[in-house]
Structures are given as C-alpha cells and as structure tokens.
Image 1: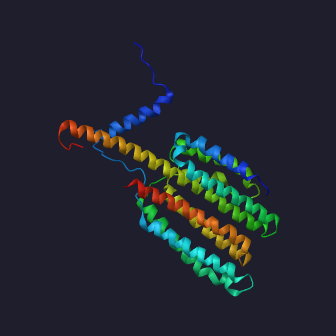
Image 2: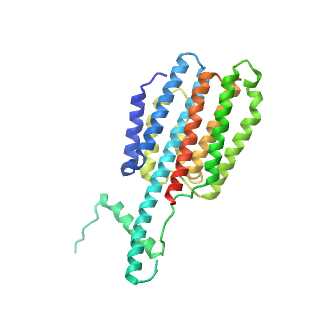
Image 3: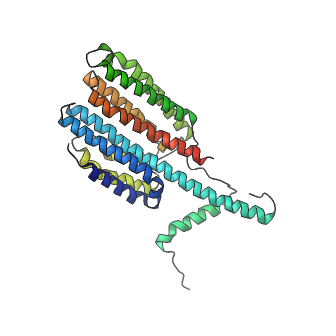
Length: 109
Length: 199
C-alpha cells in the first residue's frame, strides 16, 4: 500500500480546482488543508500495515474512514461555495434595494 | 432579420442577471441558499470530539491487557455517542428536509473526479461510485446532513475496529484520533462559515 503523498495530494488538488472552476478560490485553503491531511494519513495507514502494526482488515477499515472524509471535505467545500454565491447575490440585491429606495424616496424594497 | 446569438460562455452570467431581476421583481431583498447556523450542531460536535479524544487517550494509557481497554467495556459509550450524533443529523434534516448536496454540475464534477482516486483505494471493499452517487441523490440530505452522517459512519467504523481487534492498538489510535478530529473540523468549519455569513 505504498504511495506517493505528493502525487495523491497533487491529483486531489488538480481535480478540485478543475471541478470547482471559479469557485476554487473560495475553497482552496480549506480543501488543500483537508486533502493534504488525508493524503498524509493514507500514507501512515500503508506504513502501519507494512510494519505489522495492524492487519489488512483493520487497514481497510481505516482507509474507508479516509474515503468518507474525502467525501465530507467535498461536501464542506460545496457549502463554502454556496455561501459565497449567496453572499454575492445578497450584495447585489442590497445595492438594487438602496438604489430603488433612494430613487423612489421611500422604502419600497 | 438576424439576431446575435448569446455566446455559450456568457450564458451563465445572463442567468445570474435574470435571477437577480426575478428576485427583485418578486420583492426578495435577500436570499438564503444554505440553512442557518445551528448552535446545537456546533456545540454537539465539539462535545463529541472532546468525549472521543478523552476516551482514546484513556484507551491508549490503559494498555492492551487491561479489562478497561476491551471493547466489551465500552459498548454503552459507543452507543451513547452514536445516538448523540444521530440527534444532530435529525436536527440538520429537519432544517432542510428536501436538501441535496451536489446539486450543481460544477460541484458534481468534483465528485466524478473523485472516482480517479479509485486506484489509491485498491484492495478495499468500498464502492466509491455508490458513495458519490449517494451525495448526489435527492433525499440523501443537505451537505450538512451528509457531513454529519460521515462523522457517524466513522464513529461506527471506530467501534467496528475496536470490536474486531478487542482492543485498539496505539498505532490504530494514532490514526483514528486525527481522523475523527478531521471529520468534526470539517463539520464545524462549515457551521461557523454559516454563522459568519449571517452577520
């Protein structure tokens, strides 16, 4: 189960930046931290198995936990992107509200 | 009469403009795309992490030959902690009953890219396609629900490893502890981001 942490991390980041597109900037710090941590821990599982610290069945379950976390990281990053979109829409709506109310001279919106 | 077609790469911007125009026309002065910050989820997860962290420290200190290190001594603890997470999942589900997580094609693309990691999980019995499909399925819950379910799933796997091996070896605890921490951190980070967005 030997693997190159940098290679795994690089592939995760490449996949993330491609999939999130313009939204990547909003989640880059978060996603990189989580992906790097995951890659390092997957390497540790491989090392532990090689050292007979635990058996293959245990290693598989530990690895399953890491794959679960990869999904959680994607779900978390998704939330951050949606929050950024929400903030952008509300900022535009606030500008429109201010413009319309000022033009009408009353609180219309 | 000729018309100038809208270029495909500009179409999303027009969609955004029309969305805002429609929202204004409908009298919407703000929109909410994600459920509000939930203090109970934030505090519940923090408590769970604190309890698990203490528990794992005690197991590591106990050593493998002591009765208090055995799985049989801790079934109630695992059950109670699992039930506590279930309560948080329930709250999140109630806040957004029809929520989904990977709703947009943009984000869904990342799920597809995740499949490329299959090679790194060779030898496991995991069905990554199924995991990703679950994220996309309507009724599977919002992102918050799905993150909490993963915290629960990893809690169950921890118990399963403990049960299978009867005790948790120090090397296993050294992997499980940061794994649980990371799951809780992802969940708490998103909750706190919601809180910041509400200011």
